Length: 424
Ligand code: DOR
Ligand code: ZN
View 1 (tube, helix red, strand yellow):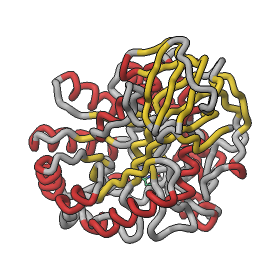
View 2: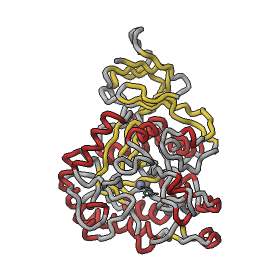
View 3: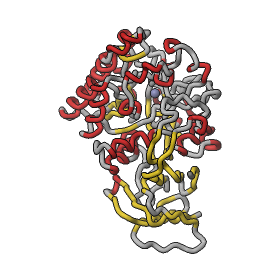
View 4: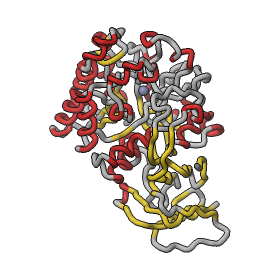
């Protein structure tokens, strides 16, 4: 099985490549990359003229809802949504039902993904049993079963002693920890960011310090235990500043944000569109500005979708009662390309945040087009303009506030192990 991708602009931050090159794929691996390559006539060809060829995108933060909530998303449909969005690898969070806090759930996900998913699916295990924040999950067992990271995402490990022990165990098994930072005593019952908009709308508020305080705590615990942490979905100016300062002091932490945190502000909630209800909540203009600055100066290493599918049962209700979360796999790349247009990131820096950096956080052999690497490749048409149509999503859910928006740039071929799994 071979594939020849010719005439494209190849951008691979892992090898510092940005040049017009051909890529030859054989037996699921990158065989060669160079100028004017020749391939057998029998080989399948993609003419990438006018397109950009990059390492397959990695989403470090996806919620698939299987097992337990298959009516929202299955491993199969989530993987299809990923492929449509240009992702070749996704890490799926542990807040399924049952929770992925033991080896049998991890194995179930891995086996299901092997037969049904068109992209690589890497399970994230829970830090605590049932995400209850009380007793540690069987971390060694989870690691052996194949989790790539640990996280109670969706919830914070409120008890600092439990979090400390979790980090110590994670350290001894060399598993990265992804922190959902939220002081639930401060955020409890809130549905949107605290500020003038929440006052005007009369909605219960979540103060930004609910995030900032836990970011500080987890950085302190990380320093104390000597185990690096990855901060999930950074959304506030405060946490960007705290992470920046910690990095400047040499603390080995990493951080991600999601496209909605640099594309939308709290004022959009005036529409009461429940797709805009996310946790952490959409911030102020100042928060958005800080998140962009954090992306620009490298404080924020990764862009992750936080794809959180919910059905109409959870979303076609009053704002107060709606579930938190929005789907993101199919819009993340296009929304992030705006950062290049706004001169916040170069194209290569953007791709770094979708490939090399998440791969480094998870310590996986992905995110590169180096010779011999898995042929996971995304081909982007930077000029393709389209109207987001949530009814066309591959995802089972359509809770996207971007329905109807005109976006520019998208994946036109998504290739996993040398096989085209999505083409537009
Ligand atoms: O908005 C969110 N939705 N934030 C989370 O932390 C969890 C997620 C979900 O699982 O729906
Ligand atoms: Zn999440």
